[in-house]
Structures are given as C-alpha cells and as structure tokens.
Image 1 (cartoon, rainbow, N blue to C red):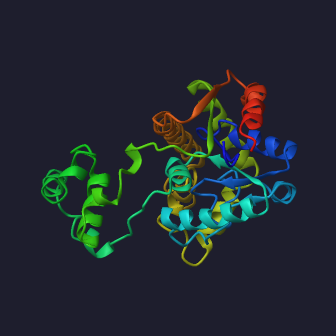
Image 2 (tube, rainbow, N blue to C red):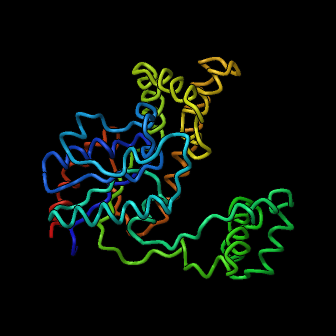
Length: 304
C-alpha cells in the first residue's frame, strides 16, 4: 500500500468505531476520519454515537461538526472537505484511518466520484409524474443511465432525470458511478458480526443513548430556529423522538420504531458494503474485538 491509509467499515453498532479508536491509540501515526453522514452535524452527538470530546482530544478526529443541524449537507460538500483533510494528514506524515458505515461517503472519499450538482428547478417538474412515465423518459434521454436503475426505483430515476435535465448532459456521462470498483490505495477492512448480534447491539445502544440524554438532545435540536434540515432529519432515531415530542407516539412506540428502522438500515448497509470486492471482511461471533489480532496484522501490512 503506497500511502498506508486504512478504512474500517461495517454496519451500525458493529463496533468499528471502538476498534478504530483502539488502533489509533496504539498507533499514533493515525488520524481518524469520520465517514458518517450524520456526525457532520453540530449538536447531534449522543444519537449519532459521536466520539466524545475527551476521545477527540486524545486522538485527532476529522469531518465531525461541519454543519449546523438546520443546514442540508451534501455528498459533494463532504468530498471537498475530505480532500482537504487528507492533504493535511499526508502533509504531517501521518496515516488516515477512515471509520464509518455511510457507503456513499466511503466511495466519494476513496474513489473521487464525480458527483453531479443539484437542480431543484428540474426536480420540481418530476415530482408529480408517475414512476413508469419517468422511467420511459429516462430511457429516451439517457438510455445508458436507464440500464443502471430498475424501472421501479423512483428515487434513482428522479435523480438521474434531475441531473440530465438540469445539466444538459446524460446522467451516465458523469462516469461509471457506484457500479465500478477501481483500484484504491486505501486498505479496506470490514467488521462483520452475525445479524442477530447486531440487532441486539442496536437495541442495547439505543436504550443506553436514551439513558445518556438523547431525548433531551432532540428536544434542544427541534427548539432551535430552523429545527432539523431535510438531511439531518433522516438521522436514525431522531425522527422517532421528534414524533414523540410532538405527541404523535408514545416513548415506547418511538423506541420500537427507531430500533426497527435502525435494524432495517443495518441490513441495507450490509448489502451495500458486501458488493464492494475490495473490502476484506473480518468475522467476529459476539464481540468485535475478537478480530483485533487480524486487524493489527492488516495495519502492519498496510504500513508505508
């Protein structure tokens, strides 16, 4: 590995953050770079399992607290910030230790994806059309791009048309996109636990976050001018607590919904990450630190 940079990825509640912090404590040449789409928001600390201030003082952390929670934050903004952070780490002669489970942020960081802009004026005209007609329109305007989405995937069809109409060039012309896995100088390592173990860890962590004050955290966030932005409002566990504070559901129902939604998200994360053939997976049975010897070996092998 030319640069010795490493990424430790996995589903939510898989223990990857604790492993990364332990690695950085043992190997001070590492600086941790978050690839979590919700840890970018200031004030969203407990519910995003953000590293504590003490942990951030002990080990350098990057790409945390980049935006206020009433702001939308895009993948393109993350990508630009990552480029600057990586240059700084390399300038100090250190190694980047990426950690997180947001697959799109990982790809934007290590693959330098060409990310099209947003075109709200083009999107507005698409919102009312049926999905089948939108797909027909995409086939006509960008036949190559149409082959990359299923005819029923409305979100991806709308995005492809938004870019095609807004930019004046086919969505597919922006590159091979997520279907291609080019060579990378990063060593990609995945932490895997059995799905039932992850499910139990998700429930236990959410209860612990409530004990740590996550409900009060959400109460403070929604009381701010502007509340939560469209992107921040997608954070796991926050939406349900917002509904509880509005009187729409009981706290227990909110907890049940949040745990269920997070478990569903973990399954999608697992499927997304498993598609990347460059990730070497380390399997643990019940405790993520079971993979520590293998992870240490990988770190040594990736050293420049």
